[in-house]
Image 1: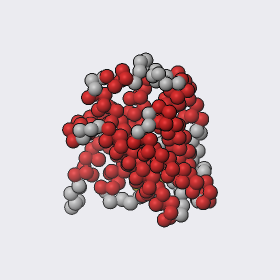
Image 2: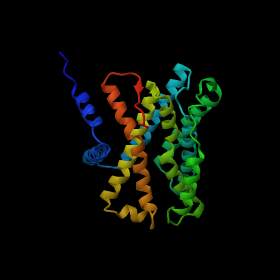
Image 3: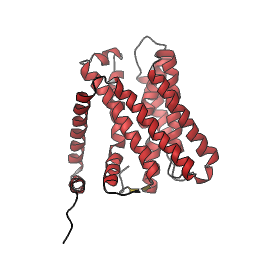
Image 4: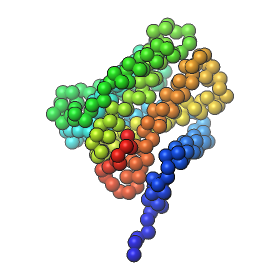
Length: 272
């Protein structure tokens, strides 16, 4: 006699059996439901952006704990950390010359911890770095982001270089996690600390996306007008949505693994 399955297992089994179009529809519905809940319980939507930065910092702290405790950087993408440091540095520059606020302080802290992680991987724990698995070519993201920033950027009154830099960091942030996903795709097995870190990135991306979407809804579109004219306002929203959906599949399997009591996350083929 088979033991009854847990509700989460039954739901995950049902979702896994659905065709891709149904899965995409369910993902959209789940995202919309989450936005409705956040809109109801969070009155100041700027707090969502602060929460996104805080969750990102927590994820990096988990990564630092892994490096210090286990003395290994296996499974971590150095290239993703490099991209993160680049977009944070560019965003900090834009914050100082365009708009200095609490986000600037949070970015400074996140950049400092990211640089420490890069230092540990490049120098202290270099022997455990999986260079053969971290084989995503950075020019695949840097070049398109730079070209896109030259073509589509804010139409504000700031200097043209600052506006292009702002657009570049927005686009780069959206795809900075791709090398980390490639590492996990190559290894198929994700140890707990790395899984916690990537899940934290997924949560941070969703909160940041929710912040922008709810701001647009509450302002009835006036926020898009404030960002400028042309394609730039739409590209900001698209970038936020893209970086959320990039990690959505991984987050699903992470939650499923946690509820299933599995310490090591095993990814099916084609997940990331």
